[in-house]
Amino acid sequence: MNPRLAVALFGGLLLSGVAHADVFISVDAKGGYVLSNVHRPGRHYERVIREAGVAQAIPGAAQPQMIAGQPYAELVRAAAEANHLPEALLHAVIRQESNYNASATSAKGAGGLMQLMPDTAREMGVVNVYDPQANVHGGARYLKRLMTLFGDDITLAVAAYNAGPQAVLSRGRVVPPFAETQRYVPSVLRQYRRLQGLAVDAPL
Image (tube, rainbow, N blue to C red; front, side, top):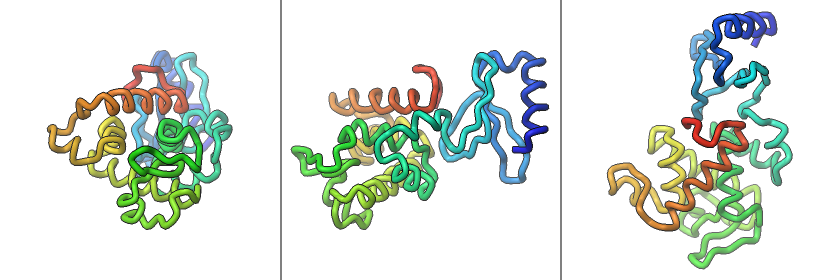
């Protein structure tokens, strides 16, 4: 964003009182600037104005320093950019799935950082699920497919990642009542919001 324009926008927001809440600035398809109080996935945000009126540049995430400090940060960044996903979302899923253990294997046979099941791994073109790069890129492709299927609804995409898309679709696009999924979804979303610098109850 042009620095002078950013300053002008920021000043106007302060004068108008809008900066008392989080305000996100994105660029639309025609190059125009759009103000919103909701940060949604799949959109590129140039700047966020926090509640206290502090502006912070965000290259695709609201907390770049926090995200950069996570394990496999460069790998996750590349996979997120390739699939137009928030880095914070990939990190949140990885932490919940394997706690960044590239050698993790579940009782059901899922493996690697993003705990890919054998069928999912084959479908995503992943030969070795224990190769961090292959696993994260394959998991990101799968998560992007789920985001597209559920209209960029993070909650449903995360639920589908855990329970399978059919479990979500067959119940009318709601989080399935499985105990594991009911625990899994809030945990991932809590971590996602934390990395994004959002309030615990912020809309997604």
